[in-house]
Length: 231
Image (cartoon, rainbow, N blue to C red; front, side, top):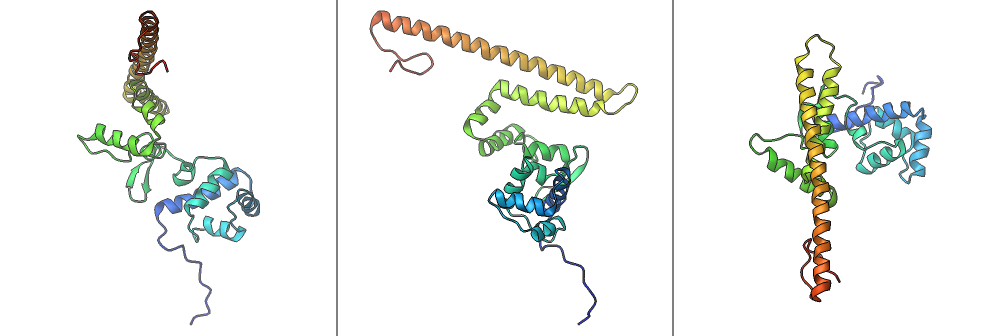
């Protein structure tokens, strides 16, 4: 056998997302101005001890990060788990394990529970509803699927595109003009849906008050207009 010193091998089955996690651990540790020993200590205090040597191996892509490690690192760094899983970019194409190469902005929307990583032409609406059904708690899902919630999502998407295109300084930027119009339409739609919620609420309050008055006058119990009862 050769006595020549060999360089450490990367962890086996080290995919693109694991590589991104390693880069982000180093990035966030530097941003927080933590030494490897300080990060190890903070993880121990959080109930997920990882030795300094193991932290160093994570950053060198020689040790895989488990899901429990990932959660603890996100807590200690005070970031979303997505900040560890995805590169800090929106304008490039990135590789997601299992998902192939996608736009970074698409990957961030997926990681933030906004939309699927990919949509099948002709099935976009169905796949979006299924994504929300299996990705979000019922109350959050109900808000997202409400017309006002969907309008809010559209505003966020269109405003993001607008700000992104505004970075491109060019005379007669057609893309910016189109994104500006789209953002204005989305804002108008959101305002209309918010007003509709207020109108519907006021109508329900009036209907419920009228029902209660009728019940008190007749002395009979009837089904409330909103499905509730007086019990």
